[in-house]
Amino acid sequence: MCCLLGEDLARQPEHAAQLPPATIEAYAKAAPLHDIGKVGIPDHILLKPGKLTPDEWEVMKTHSQIGADAISRAIGQEAAPEAVGFLHTAIDIARHHHERWDGSGYPCGLQGEAIPLSARMMALADVFDALISARSYKPAMPQAQAEAIILQGRGTHFDPAVVDAYLRQRDAFAAIAARFADPIEAPAESLS
Image (cartoon, rainbow, N blue to C red; front, side, top):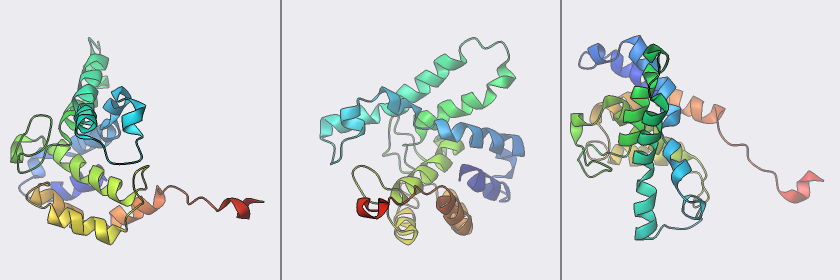
């Protein structure tokens, strides 16, 4: 999904220079690491079936910095920086994918274009995926409902240009979502 957003934005004059093919490829390689910091969140919080308490939410929010720090340590003193170049992008994505366009996000409260473009794209892809996927605490949402939430967040939660790219790519997003959807479990009595 980040690759789709990047390719679309690269066709727009205001983003073309920022998004050569190699950069889009780095974003696509780095995107799956966006929530790697959740390995540092206790299971009783991460897998809680209900709403988090304010204290639990504060712990959950640390996953972005935990992830960025872990990737940074993984890079370490790598002798071949070209081999791990995408991990520098992964640090930005992990740390800043919960920032919000209006500055009300975390962990740094960055606003607008101060948020790395890779993280602005990941923010939308992450929310889209979270909304349309079943979680321990909620059922999956239809894409039309998820899209309404994304549109509502245009200019507050999300970069307006990234929302516009999503709208141009909504059918491709739907195809990806369908391709990678979790299988629906059959009722136990029909398994015999």
